Length: 358
Image 1: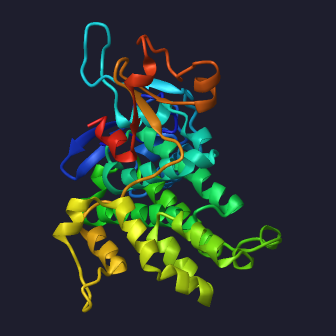
Image 2: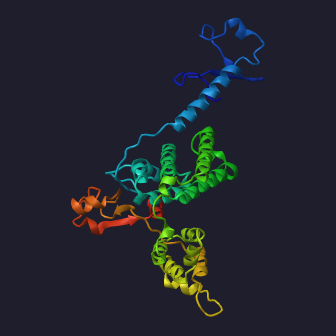
Image 3: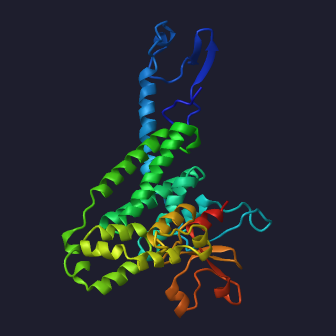
């Protein structure tokens, strides 16, 4: 029988199995709200229904309170990654432990690291949400809330955060409907509350409008055409180029430039990938825009971030590197024992971060 008691420290109720079902054993002299003759009467149909309903409501409120409570984790700049147990170190590192200990909350506020953290959380929402512990899932949603709030405050890259929330909703829907609720860690009321919060975030992002004070001053259309072309050549996302081309007629002309799409193709893909999927027009010229979207279906795009996590191959430490401290004070962001720490450092992409703990 499930434990039902107002005080979680109490041993619970005692039950006995009879021919008519399970009945509670009440000892004479035990403190309760009902007297002994009432317990001995035959009319016991709804004796404990009210108490059980009150306990269910109290448990639901407690679960929702625990899900909304902010987790307090150690904000470390680095962690030691060990995959197997040794005599010196017991246990091994997990993805949830890395989320709890590494300082992702502060990294979200840094524009150089924002896209990196957002991409990492998108991959976790797609493939690794069920591998997180209960504490790691709570921390995941706490950091995700800060990501959404960052976009709402600064209007920075809302399309990426919309994709994260959409992938998260698809994953939760697939787990609850097709796989089953058993695979989710925690009470179902917590996940229902999180789904409501995600839908609320999606509505806020869909209604997001750029404030007027951010639009004052010189705009992109006020610049000369050659400067507009240079700005568009710096974009590495094809969706940004297409959306920018739909804003004004002259920008549309620049967004269809063959040289622009050729540079974009050479940035994301290699020469071998070109020869395997070569697309020519009737005049034997390469349609670079069509080439880009064709290659995108078969090969992953090149990822580019302002700052990433680094992994020291000598110390097996994963850490955030502060470039200013590294250049001025020769502080590499972790207690390295190598003679030349710079040669041991390796940038970690979001996909490499997840594979590091598999």
